[in-house]
Picture (cartoon, rainbow, N blue to C red):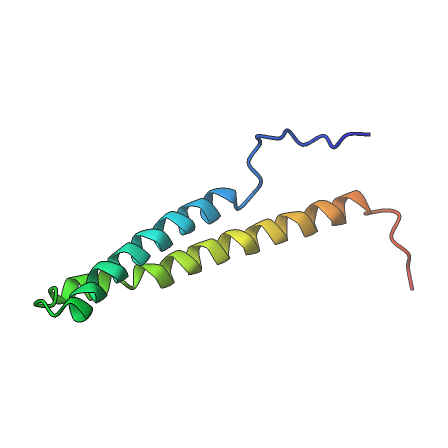
Amino acid sequence: MRDKTQPNSAAPGDRLVRAGAVVFFLGAVATLVTVAPLFLGTTPFPTYMFALSMLMGVGFLIAGAGVLQSVAAGRRQAREGSGASAPSR
């Protein structure tokens, strides 16, 4: 029997994971741009570019929050599915 979930439906936390990935990659680009002058021997970028490099960590945290939200929704769904049939001790 096929799963009832649509192939293109968004599970809880998917948007956070996608947003986290975008923010992470923006931070990665900012990091590459910030570090490049150090290897090329040119003048370094202003301090705000170093702050933009912190977006990598922020994106990682956003994506992690999305994963935790997805895990919580999966546990909730499993608990609802096995509600009355759980063995008692």
